[in-house]
Image (cartoon, rainbow, N blue to C red; front, side, top):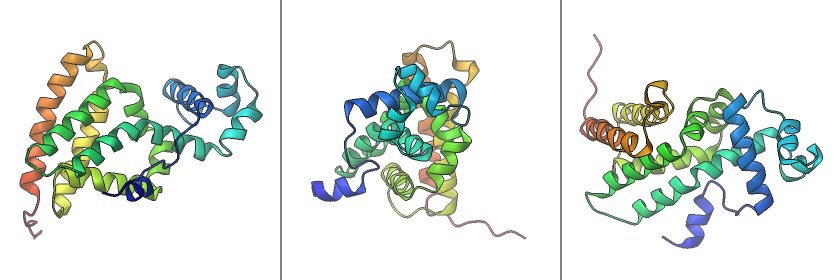
Length: 205
């Protein structure tokens, strides 16, 4: 795929500066601690030791800041999707799933924010680049046209990953154990999604 086309499709086509990345990293930590709604520009500025105006200079609105945080966290997954799109073999979906699980385990708090914080969910649901990213991710995991049942299965898969890594029941598990156990079980869900693809829907009476 031409590099220009890849760049045009990316969530954040322009790389962030070191200062912007520092702001985003701090914002993510505070979002995880307090939630997006309860985190103000002033709180982020205080944590960084700068003025609130300095934050506004980098991100004009809070929505812009929240989307930038999400894009930063999803960048590695987007790299994995692009690699999968450049491959064409039966092992590609399994390798991509392993990358998704690994990313979620390594970024446990961020995974919870991206999937369950109401502000983030609202913004991402209205953000076309994110929807395109999801379509690419799903297509790489289960190639071909998706029936509604398959898309529901895939939504369940992603929710299961994001919800599991931050669940209190697994808080005491080390990353290696959680990664191994979660990957085994998500593979079963992925296989179920593959079986659902193309299956005709049962008619309601």
